[in-house]
Length: 357
Ligand code: AHM
Ligand code: MG
Image (tube, rainbow, N blue to C red):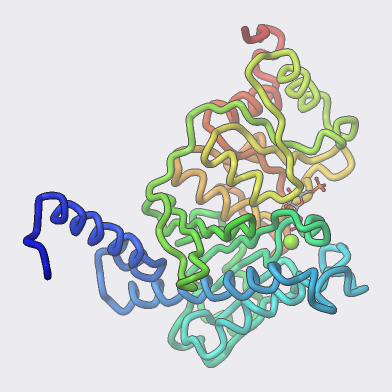
């Protein structure tokens, strides 16, 4: 026998509809919602993000079984264009991104930290005209010890026909990005993205195989307690940077967090506030991180979240690279924390600063 509906069951049904709607807010649907359009351009961007999601799922799947599979962890023996030893997962993840965009009609050109030159998919060029720039595995040193790693991506529109294959149109400032994001492979797989309308995070629901909306319109606190930097480099930095760290040590309310994977450290700061630094050293003033694949995409996200990203003397998004694999110092996070680091680097009021209580 079916009971007549009560007030209680009606509320239950509303909750069920809301939770069903939440479960159906997938990445591709969210892009269309953001653009408030079903135009061809909006469908393209939605499909592109869906493919990025597919790449993330393939990489997450392999990472979750890496310790059980032969030929997954460790080095390949090769050295990449950056002069860094390549890991097997770097190669796999790089190929995953290429593979998911074959026959997609979406991305004409992929440029990655692991490839000397961009990879062209000529059959996509007349239709898509997008370029995807990416770091397939960020934080590679964490791979073999089962700690968090990430992928970072940036979307640009191709300008010009690039007939000579020089990709010179990519050598423009970061404001040219139309979207950016990252995937964090941690206890759960999280994808965070922006197409210039706020920053949103999605969690991979393994039972559905879909990224489902978790947090919309993330705003980084204007100031936060975390400072995230490899202090092992202390004696290689300029004195002004060392003074900043000394200032942090003397001040109350700071806490250090450094995981060795930029994506993980950035994710913590995005939600909790603070500052991540990878400054240049005296010997390598441009630092370690790559402008086009790491610093600029995260700068796009942090600005969308109300924070800032700087080289110490210039906004990251204003930097015009002279070459594809250019490196840049990176100071990124909460507005006030970034301004404080800049004030040391730019030597403003260093002597008048007092210890915080
Ligand atoms: P990778 O992309 O080759 O892994 O290099 C980038 C990583 C960042 O994720 C991280 O912040 C940094 O390198 C760590 O470098 P270090 O070991 O010098 O602190
Ligand atoms: Mg990398």
